[in-house]
Image 1 (cartoon, rainbow, N blue to C red):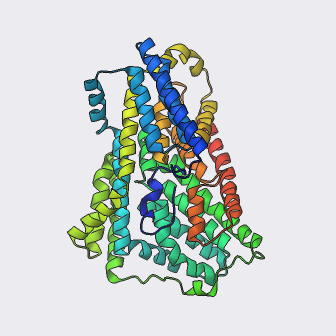
Image 2 (cartoon, rainbow, N blue to C red):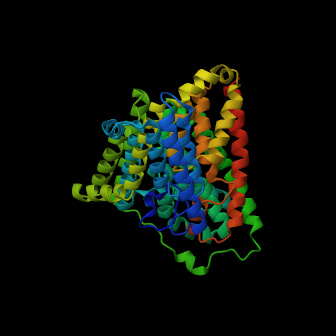
Image 3 (cartoon, rainbow, N blue to C red):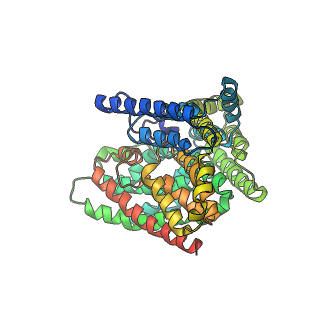
Length: 483
């Protein structure tokens, strides 16, 4: 998830949210991780020598991947270990390995990684042209600063719209929050209440973002368009977030009134955005172009590859309208995209992993052996189980979580009668719920840091107050969808 360094956070929430680093993992755990990885590879080799054809041993690379990532191994390293495990089970010829590596470059999973990179490039252009600041300024001017309810709604909407437009949580908040803090300070909001506002609004915006990697992955997995994605999953979450925000923020304000949690006087003079004719023009062009892209993609049922065209076009027309030269626009896109090259490599490796597992065919064995029993499961129970599994047990970046869940359980879901709408809800909850809790995460810390708050307990409470109603809401949606 994310830090709050403005020079690099514009895209960090799209990166794998592995909170551990090789230098911070205790030595004892490092030894444990190495032992598990080595044992898994040896077991894979033994299975490869002894077993031929479709086998349940194909589940071993996935299990190994999950255990290593959950215990803190770098997700790139864990993915490589899982790939080696799969190839040891297959024991293919070198040219067959090369074929899998080459074919995976054009896989849909790899394309999602490329989309994330291009989205980071667009975010850099929006920052350079002043579009992001202009959007925030316009929203706050519209809702006004007459009362705390209006300001709360305005600040949440500012974060929601900017995150949805940029497709990145940390980057959008890093741009929006310095513009919003003086307003929060003037209105007498505590730091904890302000952190709650930007966290709730930002997370809702990330769910709505049409070209965010995880959302593209959900639409591709469920084979639905953006409007269906909004109807079934993201729309209800956004509405619930705004409603709950208007209840949670005032409660948090009352809770912290006596905690000396207010902003200092110098915060009143913090950065204030001044829109220019070029930034206003660029904003208008961006909004029109973005809406046109969404409408076109919806009408034509454009697939996963559409953002590969839409994102660079959006960056180019917005940059030109904002007075940037084509060379400067290209440089901004490159700077943003280059910072996420590791994400592109991760998704290519994931494509290789799933291609290798598909050659082992473990899920075909499951269907052949247990298909009758699985078909007897209730779609409601099955959907809840997968959503819960994704929430607590699937590691990696959010888009990678979606891909992994769909690769492993998508076919089984269809076999038990889980429909497209329900699958959208399952994947959305599985990939987004851990942002709200139950444990601290980097998204929470990032929002706290930007709001200059130090009270993690209050941020955790905010997350729980969002997690509980959203869980109940999605449970009800799944129940009615699977009746």
